[in-house]
Image 1 (cartoon, rainbow, N blue to C red):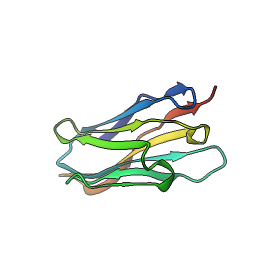
Image 2: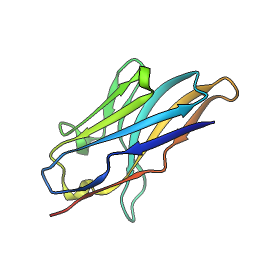
Image 3: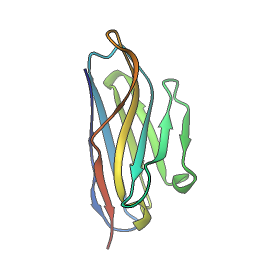
Length: 120
C-alpha cells in the first residue's frame, strides 16, 4: 500500500509564500512523475506543476514564474515552493504520484489534500 501525505498549507497574505511538501511511503519500488494539482470551490481539479523522475518540469501558465516544483528522490518527497501568492491561488492542493510497487505495478496515487488560503 502507498500513501501520500501533504503538509505546509495554511493562510497567507497576498504576495506571501508557502512551501508544500508531499511524502510518499509504503512498499515503493520506484516513482515516476510526481505532481501537484489544485481544486478551488466550484472548479475542476487542475494541474499546477509536474516533475518527472529525470527532473523535467511542467507548469500551468497561471503559476509560471511564481511556483517551483522539486523533488528529493532519496526521500520520496516532492515540494512546491509558492511565491507571490494571489487570492486566486486559494484552493485545496493535492499531491499526485505515479508509483510502481512490486505487488501492483505502476499506479496513480493521490494525497488527501492541503488547504491553501490567500487572503488579507
